[in-house]
Image (cartoon, rainbow, N blue to C red; front, side, top):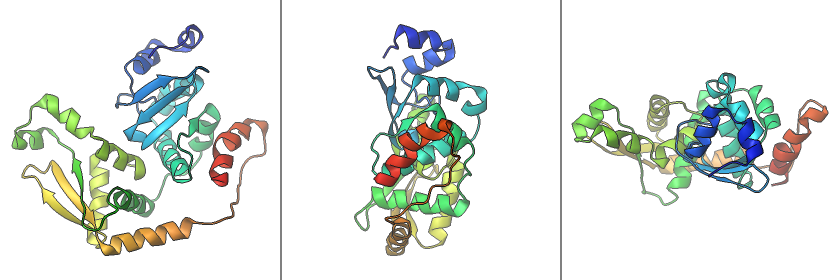
Length: 249
């Protein structure tokens, strides 16, 4: 994929290389499928963000700055993208205004993160008794399983893992694993197979877990919405591109 001359001129060498390699503009070096649209915007399919999204060049540049690339806004943006898709927006659009809006939004609480991870597990395993597999391998686990180091990154980045990170606003496997342990202690999920090296494991949702998810979904369904926002022209794009479509959906 190549950018237009005008867009390429705006891009720093670092960002140009990132886009050329097909990485996720939000999560840097994690894999994604990136294509350019006629208007210069990008359409990205990224497991780390839970699915597809659109993004304008100005937002790509903004996210590449140290403030955003290494800050927590990436987590909040990912949560927003997941929420948009739940609301029916198949490919949410990321703009500088959306990023600015999310920069001031709070992170999810631990319990909210656990509930969202459970919801993800239930959606991935709608049939009672089916299981979902996770794989996260450090050097010790890889050695125990007899895997070469060049295979570890491939296993670590499998889409199951990355989508779980996206849904639970997690930054690493330790956080996801802690949430899974919490859900297991609550009786919502059951761990099945676990490899000797600890790198591969499976989980299934219990009846109690599906019941919990139904309650979560029921508590969020409403035909009314209240929007609290700053009434300023700079917020128009955030409302028109994000808040408004989500409410309509």
